[in-house]
Amino acid sequence: MGKPKPPIQNRFGNQLRRLRIEADLTQDELAKKAEMDRGYYQHIEAGRKNVTLETVERLAKALGVSLRRMMPLK
Image (spheres, one colour):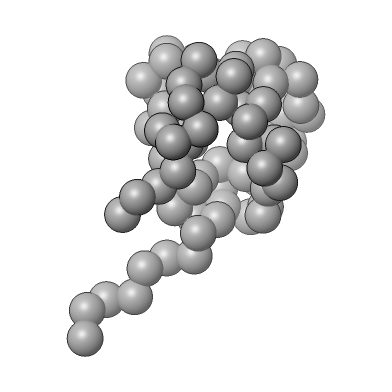
């Protein structure tokens, strides 16, 4: 048996961090673009929040990426 995957919240947070860095945005800048509190955003990226689909969509729009790109596939 292989190593178990980290929880989806951690995988999503890691994917979100990669996309944010790729977009050359700070956490604060992305939180503002997505119209959310910076502290809440930090919890998402750290894998401490289980976000709604509406939140995923807001983040995707703020990053200018598709919902598919937001999903951690590995």
